[in-house]
Image: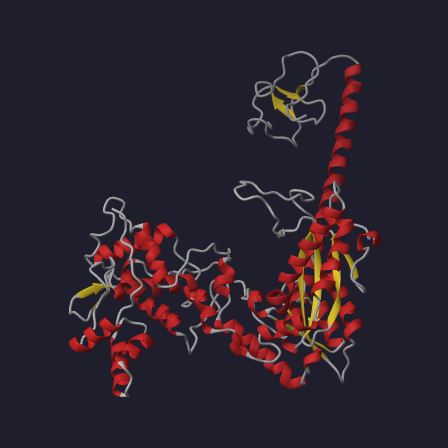
Length: 597
């Protein structure tokens, strides 16, 4: 049987509409005018005014789940989506059937497949403003690592830096790296006939080579000339043809940032920004290991650069370049790459064309408004910690019970003030504890007095179970790495590293000496055996003979059986050891050579 579809556009007359109509009629308006203003029929208005009641529905057709159950299920779907554990079509149809079955209202669903219908799902999404969308992948570390504790620490450090040195907006900068390839990941849309199954666009190769672009912008729109890191062993100036003016040429074995290259970039940054004692600079970047080296810290301290790191796994929301600038830059790069392929048919983009294509894209996107909007969106300039709403911390509630010193550093404490959805998520943690203790069916009384099973009993919100971690590595966090405490920590690490390297060098030296001594001992032993063998060959050349007799008093046991000599013995012609004839392999004629020689 096909699902029922309403034929009319009538709206349900609620008590509020009826009260409003009564108020207007008492004010002197006619019933016809009131009905027209409220969007209902005059006959319906007269009928409701006469009856004094409002209908509960528009007809005999009702939803499989009550309005209260649907609202709870819709809110649960939103909570799961906020935690990045959204439901698929089939999953929500299964959950809806189980929810209805536990509440005794599943007779309108498919009892064989144990699923709600597609028509119910379509209507459910329409009634509660939900849609089926393709999600972007997000790692667990990023999902649960971006939490209230880490973000609050970053903004506290930012506030401390600004209060101590009073950085004006034009002295606040952000730095970040991004990758550009010979085969762009994004491709512009093209015109193609309708119904065509496969739409293709020519590219340079199946996979591209990556070049790292290092960008830096100021809060007032100043752009530091970028740096391009090519995967090369030797520098080639042809790689930087048509690059943006002032581009810093860098190379590395992999094409990625290294500790030494970052110090080179800091020199490039200081040359254009010109920090001084009276006019210092605040540089904000992520806490990658190449940025947090002792050499970088010492250079920044000597050149009046205050270096502040961002919270871990939070660059997608707190990094100005990553939040606003890089997306249009990548789009412009893909457009310029497509133009180059059209203008050079039959040719491919190599590393020698990347700088020119990047230069065109960089010039097209580097604007003052874009830089100002980037710093404003992240709450850095003007200073506004509230731009990161509480709902953004919902994914981290999966590990809310783990302390900041345990696990993999993905810890957080629950925020003091939360939105309604996040509060519900936190309250559901108690429900999960009840489920572990055997209370699987949490329930609450409805307005009608019956007991209804809650949706959390059917599908609880995801919660990470606490486990003891063997890896006790320290958690990353936002730091002012140019401060003295952090510098002292780096110096201690560098000292410990040097001690370890010295110990390794000492062990290697001892190993080399031992190998040399062993080699010399083996050489002497070989020379001694060769001398004995030469003497034996001299005796053998005089004629075959067998040395029988009594062993010397120095040797009292046979090397094979370790027993004393109680019978005739035979002497080896090389090592001069005496053996029992029965223990040796001597056949009774010719010179005797023992098994060891």
